[in-house]
Structure formats: C-alpha cells, structure tokens
Length: 474
Image 1 (tube, one colour):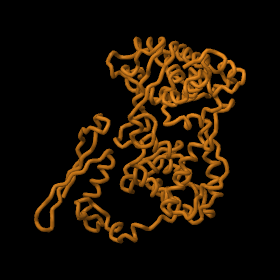
Image 2 (cartoon, rainbow, N blue to C red):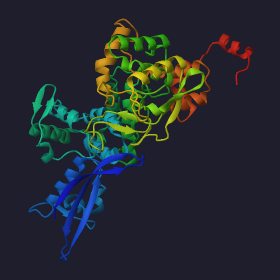
Image 3 (cartoon, one colour):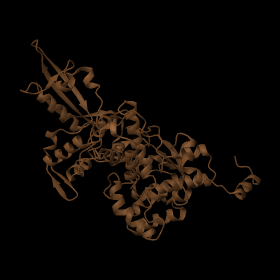
Image 4 (cartoon, one colour):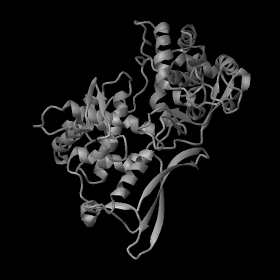
C-alpha cells in the first residue's frame, strides 16, 4: 500500500478556483483483492500528515491500521471503545486542545490567528507549585501551538529549528517546552474565578480600546464550550464583574476618533510622504465606512457613480494576510465574505455611499493608480500585487500618521479602524435613517450598531427643536 499527493484545482461555494491536495492510495485486502481510495485536503500539511499515517500501516511495531473505510486509524486511540473516546480532559492544556480541534474547521484563518493570543494565555495557567515558565515553552506557544487542527507530532517538529526572542531553539527543546505544559498545566477541577480574573488582567494589555473586550470574548467562548461539554462543573463566566469592552460600552469622548478635517490631513500626509496611491484609503474608510480588509479586496467594478456627485461602493468581500500557517490552503492570504462568523464570512455583501468630496479623490485614484480591467483591485502594492496591511502600516501609514499627528496630538496612535468609526459618526449626525446606516455599515440590525455608537447621536435639545420646526424631510 502506498500514497501520493497531487495538487488539483477545484471550485468552492463562491465559484472561485482554489487549490486542494488529493491523496490516492491502494489497499491490499486480506481476501486477495485490492481497492483504490482517495481523499482531498485543504492544506498540503494535512495531506502530508495523512500520508505519514498511511505509510505507518503495516510496519513492525506500528499501532496504525486501516478501518472499514480504508482510512488509517491509531488502534491505541480507537481500540478502547466508546468509554475511552468519551474521557474528558483533565488539565487546562488538554481541554484547550479539545476545544481547538472541535472549532478549528469552523473558523477563518484570520479568526484563528486573532483567537491564538487568548488560547496561549489560557495555556499558561499552571499549578500553584509549578516552576517558572521556561523560555522553550514560551517559544512553543508563540511559534507552534494552536496553528493547526492538531498539535504536530515529534517527527514533524524534528525537521525544523525555531527562532524566538533572538534565540535558536532545537526541536528537542521545543518538544521539552510542550512536555512542560503537559506536566504542569492546572487540573480543570482546580480552575476557579480567581484564575479567570488574573487571566483577564493579563489579556488587557493592548493599545486598542477594545483589546481586553475582544480577547475576553474568546476566553468566554472557550469556558462556555467547556461547560457545555461537561469539562467543568460550573459556569466560570458568571459573577466576574464588568469587563471593559464587553458590557454595552459606547464610544466616549476619550476614544481616538478623527474628525473630517483630520481625515483629510491624513490623506495629505500620505501624499507628502510619497505614497499618493494610498491617499484615498482614509477617505474611503472615513466616508463609506469600509474596513481595511474590505478596501484591500475592493475592485474597480465595485465603484459606480451615485447621486449628487457621490459614488456607490459595493462591498463584496475582504482580504486578510494571516500567514501560511493559519489558512486551510496554506497560502499567506485569505479571501472571504465581509465580516461575519465562520470561514466564509457574509457572502451577500452590501452597498454603501461615498460623499462627493471623497468620491472626487477616488475617481482620480482610479484613473492614476488602478488598472482598466473591471476586476482590477482599487488598492494594490507598489508592484501591483494585493495590498499587504503589514507593509502598508510600516512603509506608509505610520510615517504619514506621525507627520499628520505629532507626538502631543490625540491621534498620534490612531488606528485605521478609527476612520470607519468616523464614517458611522458622520452618518448618524447627518440624520441618515438608522436602518440605512446599519445596512451601509454591514450590521444585521440597528441594535448592534447602536451598542457602539449611541453616544455619537446628536443629543442637544436646541438641535432637536430646530429639526422639528424646519421643513419636513422625508
């Protein structure tokens, strides 16, 4: 019996061509006949791991055998019957691996990457008498852990060397780092709310206002999954108090959100820094409410003339750069629908409006920096490839931001997403109907939008009275 891997082109549910990896093998039956099998994989690494299991079948001392469907199975894991398969994990580390294996296929590559910091932080919950976390364990968590559906075996790790914090770790050291987690991870029976509170304090260490809230949301999902699977006896998420960024917060006056003049200042700064091909980016985000990933996937055909000199922007998808170790295909980039749960996102898309002043700049951009083909990307790298957000940040956005907003300016550390907040703020203060604003922004309902932007609605009595005595606006 042998197996080989072939790269083939297939069509996914969005009618786009994607590469998959097909493994074909032949099983010789005990009755004297033979039978051919094949199976397709999204990632080349998964196909290679499957081939390793196939090659282990029949070897002396191997525990691998073929099941009734011709698939390789480990007899030590499947021979124990239902009772062995139903055994619950006993430590935080083992429970995290069970959660990751159960949810990995249903998440996008970028979603897996975003969830990884929370899972790593939970993996560092150790027994009270555990020694300090070794540097090899930190390297394992940062470079290896939670990147695939299952943790790599020792054979896979031995083929690589790992660099972390300026130090080179051998495969033996990395394996020892994982062994430390297996030995010293906290038993689930000892996990209580005090551990969760300390974890929350550790997670809230980002510059963004919602860093703590976003990471806590991931931790809460893990804890509730454990409770649903009866890994833990009680709901560890209750009676924890208010977590910043999770309990219906609103964008207050202390949030670093630019105004329209500051949006234009950022556009001019990009030009002055020699990056005029990106000058329209803050205008599209601050005028039409696009996310940076949606700008990266925007095509020429998606920009059409609108009323009063503006433009209609059709948002059909998003592009992210999670890296090769996070995606199903093994590619460094990931194309999916607009922001939504699951690996595909929201495939319906949406339409939003770009005001006339910003639209005039985008039209100039289309003439000077965009190819003529209908499916040409609006924003690309200097070499014409897809826009890499990391390179954009380093080579264009950060230098322009430092020019536009000096050290003492409130927007000195402003993020790209803040310009989307500006767009929504403009819609609400201009009196755009709430249902329309929610649809333009890509929210399922008005309540979700108002959860974050209620404080941006006009709240002045004189303003309201003036609108009531003025001519009706329908």
